[in-house]
Length: 457
Ligand code: GBH
Image 1: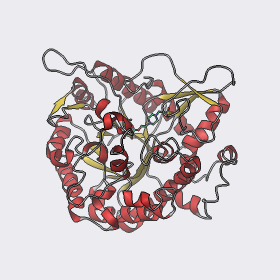
Image 2: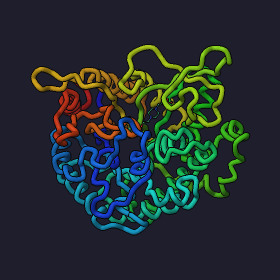
Image 3: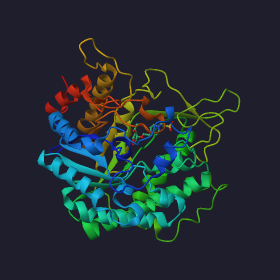
C-alpha cells in the first residue's frame, strides 16, 4: 500500500518561536513580546527576542529542509512584522517573500499560517480577540498577505489552534495575553471563528483563488466517561469544528455555558460567515486526553493547564476531572499514545465525511541524549515519530481516511511558549548561545522515512 499522490512530507515552525529580530525592520510588539517580558510568565523569564535567529539564518534553514527532503514547509507570518500599526511594512513582507521564493527554488511547497498566536499588541490594547473589530482587522491583514505572496503559497491557513488563543490566552491565562476571564474566552473563540470566515473568504475571493484554504485545530482526542467527553468536547472541539463546517454552535455548549453568557456576541449571519469553504482541515495531534465526571470525593486529578487552584481553560466544565494515563510521557508530561492519532483520524472521517485532512503538527519534547561521538541520540523522539507515522498509515490505508500531508513539529528546537527554551521539540538541535544547528538522530530518521515514502527502516 502507498500514500496518495502528492502527499506532503513536511516540517513546521511558527514565527515567534523561531524568528527573533523582535525589534528589527519595523516590527511592532505582539502580545507574546509583552507577555514573555513580564516577570513570572515564562520559564526562566525566556523571551522570543532572539529565539533561533531564523530571521537572519533562514537561508541555512531552507538548505537544511532541502537536505531533509521535505516537500512542504509550514511556517507562520508575524502579523506585527508585516502590518505594524495596521499598515503594510515592506521590509517585513520582503522577508517572507524571499523565504517563499527560496522554498520554491528548492521544490518545497510553502504552507503559510497567518496567525500563530502573535496578535499585534496595539490590537490587544483595543480589546484583543474578545473585541469584534479584531476579526475584521485580521481579514484586512489576510488580504494584504494574499496580494503580496499570492499563489506562490500552496496552502493558506488562517489560524493555528484557536483553542489555545481563546482558552489558554483569555481563560487559563497561561498564554498571552494572560487574562483569566471565561466569558472573554468564549467571546474570543467566537471572534476567532468569525475572523477565520472573513479572512478565508476574502483571501479566496479577492487575492488567491487558486491556492488551498485551511485552518488548523488542536482537536482534543478525548477518552473516558461519555458525559465528560461530551462536555469537554463541546468547549474544546465542537466550539470550532461545528461553526467552521456549517453546523453553527452546538446546542449543548450553549446550555453548558448558559450561567456565564447568553452568547449575544454571536450576531445574525456570523455562523454562516464562519463556515467558509475549507479545502483541507489541519489537525495537530500530540496526545489523548482522559476525562471523567468528578465524584466529589476522590482527590481531584490534573491536566496541563488545569491544575488545582489555577484558572481552567475548560470553561463550563467544572466537575470534570482530567486524569493522567499510565505509560510513557514526554518532557511536557504528555502521554505517548499513537493509537489516539489513528482514532482521531477515523473519528473525523466518520463525523465529517468528505473533509480532507492534513496533520499539520505532530512531535514530542524529550531531553537530549548526547552521544560520545557528538551525535544527539534522541531515541524517544524517533520511537514517537515511528509509532505516529505507523498510526497515520493505518488510518489512511486500512481506514480510508483522506490525509493529504504530515508535518513534524518541529524543524528546529525553539521557544516553547510558557516553557521557554527548556523544552526541545526539534529534529534539529539549536545551541542557543551560538545559534549553531546540529541534526539530531531523529532528523536522519525522518529523512530516511521520507525517502522511503513514509515507511521507515
Ligand atoms: C502546539 O500547541 C503549538 O501549535 C506549537 O506552537 C507548540 O510549540 C507545540 O504544540 C508544542 O507545544 O490538558 O487537555 O489542555 C499544542 C498545545 C498541547 C494544548 C496539549 C493542549 C494538553 C491538552 N496543546 N495540551 S489539555
